[in-house]
Image (cartoon, rainbow, N blue to C red):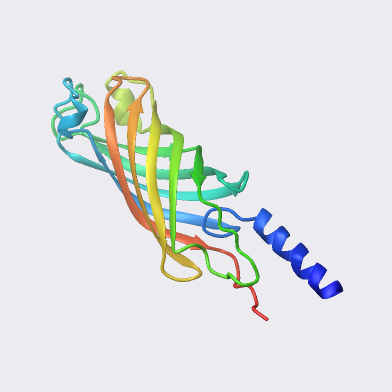
Length: 197
């Protein structure tokens, strides 16, 4: 009787602690930034170059279906403003808080791996701190954008998943242009495998 009760309590505890791709996970990805997609209709944008960003994320459990996603990044905007010369670029450092809505893992003693497919929807905000090139043409160094993204992590094994995300980003200062960001990377589960008896 005691062992049965212990099993039930462990299962409830493990399920209540479930979050995105395990209890503890980090993500590393490389993203490309596109201003020139036809559907964006950025009429003031002559930029058809590809910019990039590298990002590191950490997920913090808020509930079974939602996590807080915090991250940092660094990258390079190619010709980020109409005031730039044709081949000018600006490096930036990014801070990125977000809420991530996802399916629960429900990890138990009999299910030791994260889900095979882990879809998510993300609402976030990017704070991009630009380098001195940006200030030199008369802009403030802080460049912000609202982010709406969807994606998934596909499990390779208990510890590693392949990360895909596409997001629509709306700048809320400088020139109010819209851009896409598409990211590919890995999500790493920091939890050890549970022991099956």
